Amino acid sequence: MSHAKLTEEFLKNEPKTDWHNETLWWVRSKRDVSSKGIPEWEELRSLASQIKDNVLSNIGNYLQEFEKNALANGVHVHWAEDGKEHNRIVQSIIEKHNAQRIVKSKSILTEECHLNQHLESNGFDVVDTDLGERIVQFAKQPPSHIVLPAIHMKREEVSELFHEHIQTEKGNSDPQYLTEAARNHLREKFLKADIAITGVNFGIAETGGFVVCTNEGNADMGVHLAPVHIACMGIEKLIPKFEHLGVFTRLLARSATGQAITNYTSHFHQPRPDQEMHIILVDNGRTKQLAREKFRNSLKCIRCGACMNTCPIYRRSGGYSYDATVPGPIGSILSPGFDLKKHKSLPFASTLCGSCSDVCPVKINIHEQLYEWRQVIAENGLDDMPKRFSMNIARKVLSSPKVYFTLGKIARKSLSILPKSLINNPLNAWGKQRDLPNPPKESFKEWYKKNRS
Ligand code: SF4
Image 1 (tube, protein in one colour):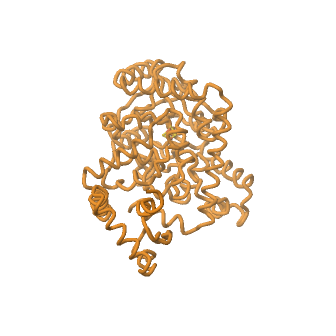
Image 2 (image 1 turned 120 degrees about the vertical axis):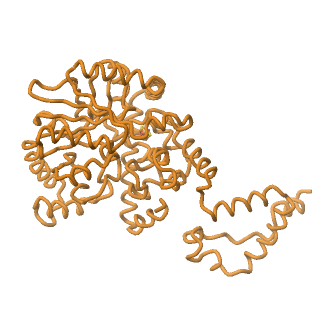
Image 3 (image 1 turned 45 degrees about the vertical axis):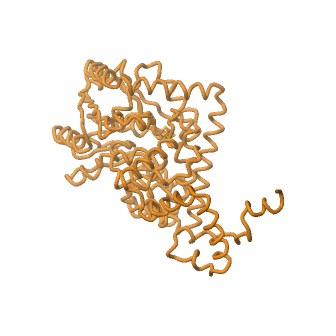
């Protein structure tokens, strides 16, 4: 279904749409205040962008360096070409350890690979331990935002879900009470876990180590208690050296939520003496995106979510309207690379105002890439028939002054006598929420001739 069609569903609840819009704008404003507290903010953005340029140009070398150092640290390294292979590897590790109970901290990559569905259909119990992720897991929904997975839900809805799943008091939506209940519920899961799965925010080629950033410490709780740790990492998450890490951690939390740093920035280098550690390096379409010259920059993304918080379309259409793991402006340039036909409406879900590019901490030219995708879609004949038809007519009319002025005259006359229902009717999507002003009696050219000649 197109983005516009799915948006209609979200817009049905107008007060909630307003609340979603205002909440994300509040997060965006916090990001502004926080970034202004760093005088060298723009230099940091440029530096991060250049470091990622270097990574993308030498990704093969950095991946090999990372693998060599991780192996030397005693970590098992696996390579997955796509989501299916990634899921098979995770399952094989689980089966090798005869494990049943799995705790997972937030990882967009595992969402992208549909890991939960794969493991659950094979009889394993997977518990998402990030609070927002647990909420959407109870609701049997995917995350609607990459940093704030349950941002589309109000606390009264969370209260209902918690009452149903973890038997909290009916109608009690006090955030402190609900958080406490979730903490007790998850603590038991951590204590019994056989395997902990985490994502990776940054993999460091120089050391073979990696960093996981969370605000709840749930990744650490899982990893510190479970005998096996599986870290799932997209191949673009690499940075060359340890000294580069500070550039990204200073940008990430400020861009995401306006915090100076995430509450937990956990470094992993090697397994504990009694633990096994695995890293799965996943491609899943990333090398294809790397080969697309105009779109390769999108692989610089550090998944901060700032482009979503600032986007006027995302804020008023919600994450589910994108029908993709990564929604919002960055999702709209990543998803067409996976499936152009399915996601052909996404590059048009933008005003091209450029606010996404302005806030992006790694300076991805998001709005320019959205525009590029629109051209690719038109070149492949995937744009809407009515739009293509009307654009062809517009091209003919606008390229001939004579036709333009004649049609202008006819349109002004007709619009002043024809009934408004011709424009504002349910069959005309444009006219559903718009009104045309009364047409002028004469064109500007005619007026100018009369008054200024
Ligand atoms: S594209 Fe930029 S702003 Fe958007 S999530 Fe990625 S890093 Fe953040």
